Image 1: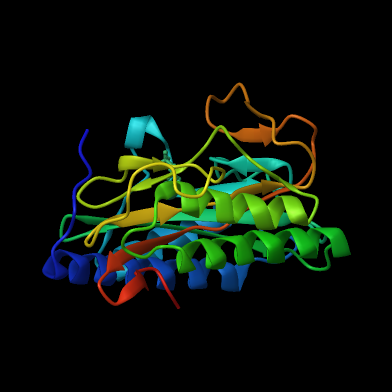
Image 2 (image 1 turned 180 degrees about the horizontal axis):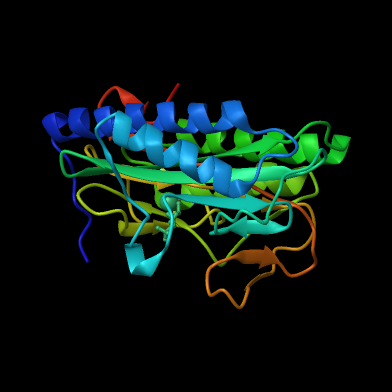
Length: 250
Ligand code: MF3
Ligand code: CO
């Protein structure tokens, strides 16, 4: 399928969607603490989305049951909120959410430490978030999707971690997932050329150990094959004449 470029008017709508999503993530992050369940996070998110006048993007998408994905520790992505999963100090939880406003989607994720986490885990969070920041700097007209992936991969591997291959970033707009796919690995200069008006969701998923992933029997939760911790950060970014614009920014 062809890549859909957005007008500045459409990008403005996506920015409004992204602003609401950021407020949702901030509200959820504020309640993360030992003793809180991932279903508690789901309830905070659902209320906030509705209060801000948006609709959840994930609930009902291929029958996904919730507005959030909450992926704890060795869970990479698509963890399903549960009353039974109670967070404890030393855990990390990736909070991934999407909303629709006025027909336009936004999609973003953060990984949050619970209480005190091990130094290596702190480093995992920092490297994953930094890899997203560096990838965004690459999002200028004329660069390629390969430049984005190569940048993430380089920083992650330099720090001794690995990039998940089984899940990728994507175009986004009037649908949650549009072309092109955006792997978090790649070769500079290869892949789709970045054009004015493209909006991409960039979402590095980084494992402490090996890159392998498998999906649990619930058909959603992706975990690391080796049981190592995994982090996930995601932003939606528009490519403009003036450079990258982060639509889901603080
Ligand atoms: N950020 C994830 C993605 O782009 C979230 C999708 S969750 C789903 O794949 F439930 F909507 F599938
Ligand atoms: Co996404």
